[in-house]
Length: 293
Image (cartoon, rainbow, N blue to C red):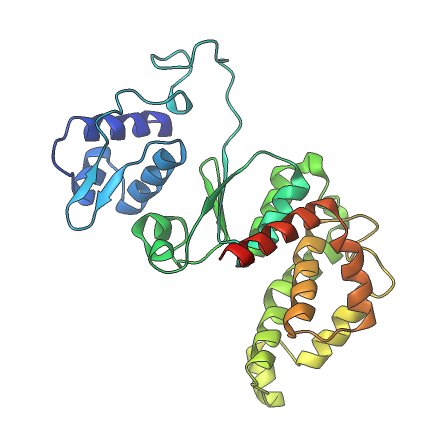
């Protein structure tokens, strides 16, 4: 059974039920796990079918839904939009985020790509811990993306994935030249984030503890990162890349919130990145979110 067929079957099962259908029963009828069911419900909602989930009872479908929307129609199948092409449509790119979160990193990456994507805002609290969203990210945090059938979480992983998924944007160096690209992208995602978090909490590990933590000494990391960006507009070669999106975000936010010092090397590097049109759009969006709450 293709995914499109399964989604159509999900609609059919719910359309012919007057009472809510429990999740386990619905998953069994489709021959999938509960987690897959949650993901499929999220897909239906993404194309405009508001499947209602009543806790403790199950799923129901609004009575006005009678046929799968064009987005779920198989090529040449009834219900397909008139005049629609039989060619395979590009995989939908869905962005799950909260504007006041690390989702800002992925938002910037998406804007740099210049591709179509749909944003699903996820509020802090119950929405992030709902079964439907936990099927996307079991940690119950944002950001996350769904690209067709592929789900990716963790900001650095998302940036790396998107750079490879959309090579025409040229946001990753050629494979043979990715040493610095991978090095700085994942240093920022691992040691830098761990060390800055510990430092911000006032935790000063002993040398022995620092070795066990794996992130090393905070000030050694600061010096290393400052040396990497000193006198350079980009951190991994001569062109802007996904590594600049991720590392630049950490440096910009780090200086703003005091988790990194305002060193001249950091300020010069961030000043260049902050003027990029995609970053300016994202900054304006975040500022508006702060104002409106």
